[in-house]
Image (cartoon, rainbow, N blue to C red; front, side):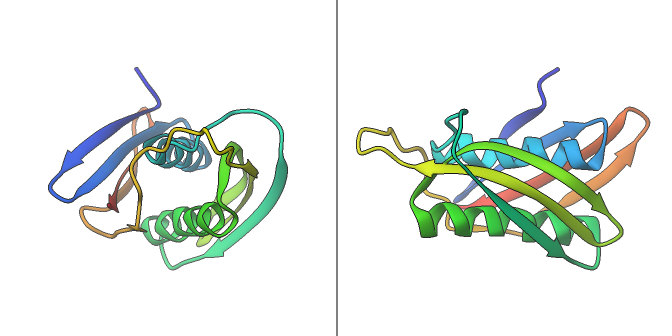
Length: 136
């Protein structure tokens, strides 16, 4: 079974991510965001640390992905990697590896924002899952 799947929605696009841990779900959702936006390009680059705090796991995921989206947009960068150091009790810390987008890079869908629409983050018998939609 894949780590995530893309969810179609009117005027939005979403992802349903799975993982053995909450940290894995954050990593898979980040990669999905990057692939949807056409900026996933595994390799080396500048590692940028991200730390966010929120009241619950859903808000934490939205804040994490929003920060990734901000960094990508601000730096006009490809995302080359993602690694979570910690995700627990209202705090997530990790890093994304960024590199400048080349002029011939094929862009995907422009993501405007991470939304709370149908947001779901939960633990089940086989691990964690998350559903999050992006405004496009």
